[in-house]
Amino acid sequence: MQQYDGQCAQMGAHHFDRYLTYRLERLSEEAIEIASRIYRDTCGLTVREIRVLRLIHDRPGIIFSLVVRETLFERSFTSRVISGLTRKRLISRTAAGKGDARVYEFRLTRKGEETVAAADRVGLVLERSLMSPLSGVEQKRLLDYLDRLTAWVEGDFAARAGVPR
Image 1 (cartoon, rainbow, N blue to C red):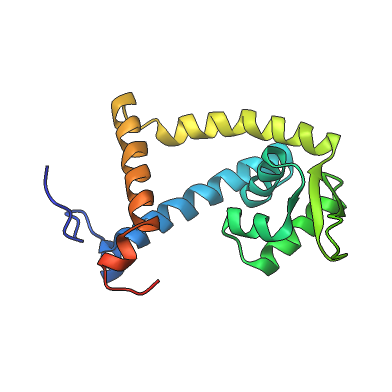
Image 2: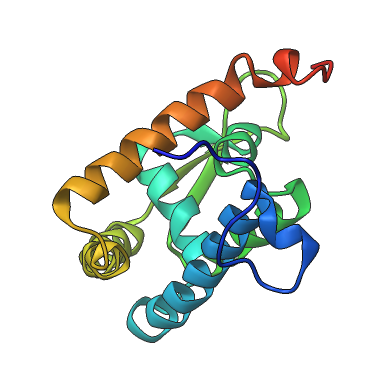
């Protein structure tokens, strides 16, 4: 297997096309845009809105700061998403009761639960379609490689790259 040297035989005309982080972000953003159109048509929500709903589904009572941390969204964007989901009556919020009236816990409403279930059905089809150019073995390898790279970036990468954390 050839060592990755930051260059790709099929690079485009742009210098930044050779950087892995750019290529991963571009793939992600393009896939999210396509999926968002499908989710909007079937569920009335974008991928990012569904991401927040799924997180609240998986962690009922989650507070805003944890939603921001887990989704990796900007605080202002997360606030707009939460407000929109609340307006659509997909989530409810209640005071966390920890002495700070500004801290709220979020839970799905029945309508939110139904929306997550519908989105999960659509998501399974989208995931299969996205991975369809790869064989089953290649899909497993890709997921394994992503897990290894994620662990590396979250662990030793910054220190070994000479970047203070």
